Length: 210
Ligand SMILES: [Fe+2]
Image 1: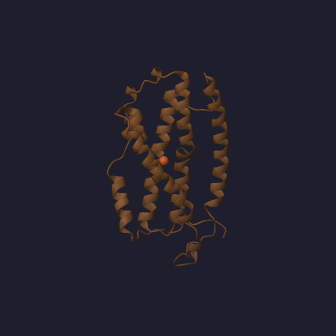
Image 2: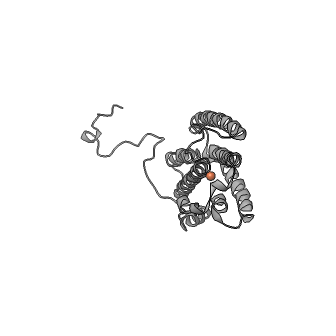
Image 3: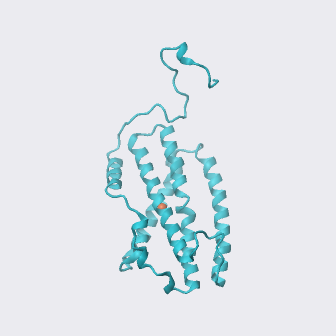
C-alpha cells in the first residue's frame, strides 16, 4: 500500500495492521515466574562507573600482566559488548511476536544488564591499557602483541557472528534463539560469583559479579 493513501477518508476503522509489527499494543501477563524475575531486576539499578575505580591501580602490574588481563576482558567483550544489541534485537522480536508482557520486560531487563556488562568491559580494558580500544592500541610486550593480533581476529569473527545473528533472528523462535544465550549467562554468573568470593574487595571483585 502506498504510504500516502488517506485511508481515513474512506474507512471508519483502519484495517488490521500487517504483521510482524509492534502494534497493536497489549499488556497480557500469564507467567508469575517471569513477574518475579522482573521484580528482582527492579530492586536496584547498578552503575559500573560507581565501582571504586580509584582503588584500582593498574600501575602495580607489569605491562605484560596488564595486557594479559586486558585480553581476558577483550575475550569477555566479544560476547558481552555485543549483547546489548543482540538482546535489543530480540526485544523488538518479542514485540513483533506479541509475546506476553513479562516476556518483553524480561528481555528488556537483560538488554539493560548487558549494557552494564559492556560498560565494565570497556572500563576495565581502558584502565588496564590506558587506551579505550584494543584495535588501535600499541602493545608494549610480546604477549601484548599476540593478544592484540587475536583481538583483531576475535572482533572480525564477532562481525561474522553478528551478520549470522541478524539473518537468524527473523527465522527462528525466541526459545530456539535464546536458550543457549541464557544458559551461557547462567554459567557466567556462576563462574564470576566463584571468582568474586576469592577476592576480598575492590573493583576487580565487584566487577566480576556484575
Ligand atoms: Fe553479560
